[in-house]
Length: 99
Image (cartoon, rainbow, N blue to C red; front, side, top):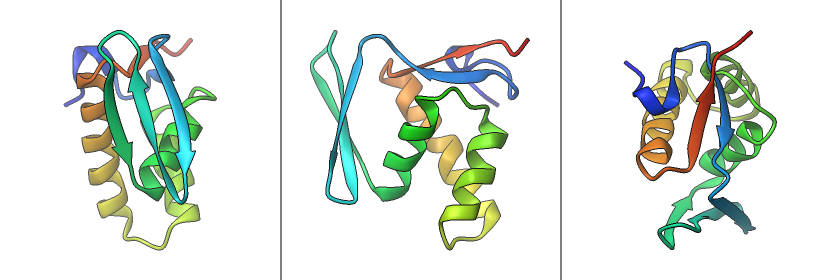
């Protein structure tokens, strides 16, 4: 079940205004400017972060990542849900109701 910060499953995820990022090789880092905490992302996580910049739902993110990466759909979705929870826990993503 999604956290309050990431809203309903069809909510549009967006970067927090307090977050900045930089690609480093295949992955990258996201920094919470309010807390100065750094969050390191692998290649898949960084791609998800880039997609979130354009405003995407969980389903849209999963579909795109499944198309781009060679991994089982169930694994992509499970790891994406964990990533979203982690990013939300760090205050790096917010959700807006679709509509």
